[in-house]
Image (cartoon, rainbow, N blue to C red):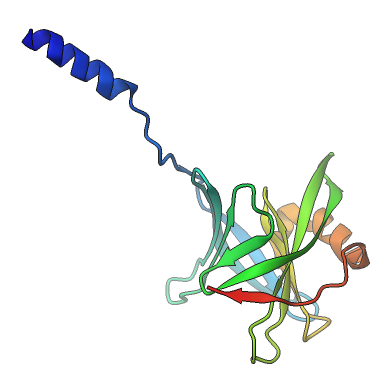
Amino acid sequence: MKYFLLLFLLIFLCSCKNETSKQVSDYKTISIKGGPNNQSIDSAMFRIVINNNSKRFEYKSTKKDNVYFQLFEKETGNDSILKAPDFDCILIDSQFFEFKNEEVKVFLYSYDLPDVVDEEENYYFSDKYGIVLSKSIAWLNTSTLYNQEELKALQDSIMSDLFKFSNPSPTLIKN
């Protein structure tokens, strides 16, 4: 009888599923270019962490003395919000672009802190690549290109056709 209970317990434990599965990609080094002519170049480590109900996009500095860290999270099945640690960027629009022989859906999210001047930013985001580029609303000629080595053609398509997206009106929800 005791062996039967042990066998039953073993079968029961083996049949249980771990409900909190997590997939973590390795960090890869990407460039981040910013400024009016994208002349400022920095390196960052980038990875994607996939949980059951969300996907997290992590960017961190490659310099040990620099604490630069950027984190965005998107819930599965909810395109309306792109979460960051202190704010939620609201979806303005989405469009498809041809990139690497496939249609890539690019979302336009807007960031604007209430009662703060000159920080307004539009984030162009892809579920597959994370932040593709960001564009300052306050400083019209200023943008930031993420991972230009891989995403240049997609970034060029977005930049050449910004009016393809609806007219952005910055909105923010504080967490």
